[in-house]
Length: 498
Image 1 (cartoon, rainbow, N blue to C red):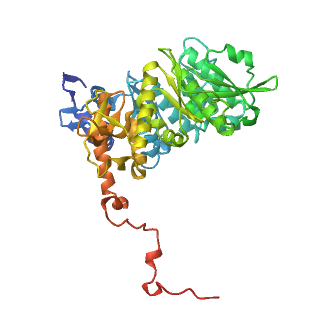
Image 2 (spheres, rainbow, N blue to C red):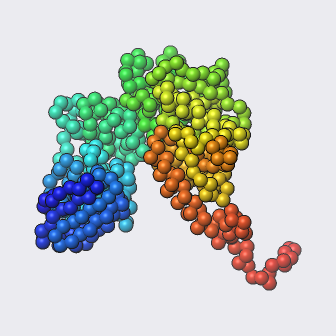
Image 3 (cartoon, one colour):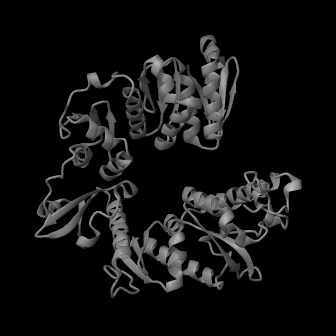
């Protein structure tokens, strides 16, 4: 197989021989081609002599060509890893209709196809391919010990390796610990990869990442309190120490949600929590979440005497903004969208909003919160000519409908994927008409939301007859409601007395 030539408009051709053409025209080849078309939005044309691949993204086109050329390959490449699975276990890995395999692809952002028990895993990032291999091995080991007999226990700090193994001595504790979402917490906190394959915990990453991951995982696998004193925690560069009132001890579960490992420390009859994670952002997120939980139980524990404050730091810093009584719940409902659009961490603790990040991120977060409060009062006026905003023409029946209950789930999902913040304001540049505005740090993503995603969401909403009351029609009846399915002769009949 050879690349004939590359054209700058993201168009590649791959030459085929007779044997390879028959493979592509077979069941496995056609399935892989259809999957490429659906996943990446590519145009794949197969002829007897060549395959033409067209697509909007250069990396996706190159990855598709690598997939096509790998049909006769059994060895790893720079963007492909090969994993052999017993043929009788391949169906368990893929799941009914390929659901299990699709979940693994979505988690690690990889492309996978299989043929006769051989799984081909494609990604430009080795970490994604290794994580996919670990997850498939974990599924196979639940039925049959295929890979773990070949593992040997190693020290995570050993030089010259990228994967370390250590064996579980109490299988019940280890299985229970790593079947939860704590795997993701270990991965985020350490920067490496942690998974369980049979009776072994496998750790992949650099020497520092493996060392951190081994320490974090051992906290839960041993089933015993870790031997970490307050002085040792203070000396760790990946730890943040937080004093706690005894009344709220163990009232939170922040590990899985924030990608951290939290260890309780008791010293001199005082309670502390050590938040362990290599990324500073993860530790700060866990700190703010714990503060929020404690504040719900003990009013004023962290917010007494706190008002509006701007940090003078140009880099990482913390700002605060004081809310009124009727504004707290309204801001809490939109903090995720504002956090995605501004890039800073935002958490409502009591009646105070905390902004943590760089100076630019904090400034954007404060501005978006002020806009949100002005929109709540109906007094927000902006200009569609602002280069940092994208304005959408009024295509909804009422622009405020997009902020109502019928649209909330779709809107939250859209704001999370495209890292934006959608809100309603009056356009000063167009006779103060009410319009939708999209705020975010990437203008290309804002344009996609305004021109493609929001109109598509409106179309889906209009085609859903459950929301016919928005069109001035009678609300559609729930088919599960049996009140109108009774015998017409019984309607209005009096209930007999007993």
